[in-house]
Image (cartoon, rainbow, N blue to C red; front, side):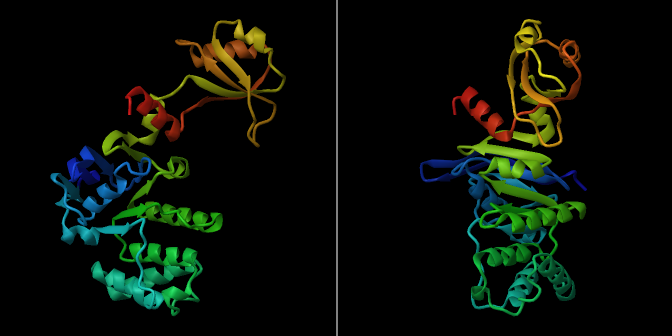
Length: 311
């Protein structure tokens, strides 16, 4: 069994004179939660449609669990597109079971899984109602259950939090956590990097049809660290004194998190200064109650990367 459940190799896709994907390659590790991220128009939807064999690439290949992507690999996938598609006149339970059977699911097991998810989303009392009788938020829940009911090893959710209020968004996060515990691989596609990055172990970042970054999120953030420290002290610091010590490039007060007590600062280290040396300089002025390196957000990495590469 390969470590990567999804392998994308040198995908190219043109629509007329527009190149939607330009030699895109990346792997998604088995059991990971992977964010497929980029602004609107980056090529994410085109990429997902090729992975799901809805579109055919002009060149390149996709492998899913070691098999070349085709209609036969659809049984391995649970794909919820951004453009939701349900049958308004079908009852909820009939619709979910129908989609599960299309993917080859066992009817008895499909019903068990369906009932579990209906209960999670608090729809268990509505399963005999028609889809058209539901609110948009509840229709979204039905779409998600229909995507997952056949227990696919690879789940792809395109803009999954669109249309969800905070309560249902939290339920969806719980569901994604359950999938992860069951060793499913989950790909979350979104233009909203801030909403997704906290859930992801891995990311794929694309823009203008080109791959910018892919890999472990922690490794990517570490590679783009800014030598910025967040700290709190029991007593206020003398900022002029600290600035003169040679360890600090800049220092500014900042808001403190609820669990921190004291005076909070954001400090930019001078190049080559170790955390230990900086901490020694600060400790001369009083007790340090919290000290952590500030890692950049994905939004910051994206902006920095595109600025530096002229994109």
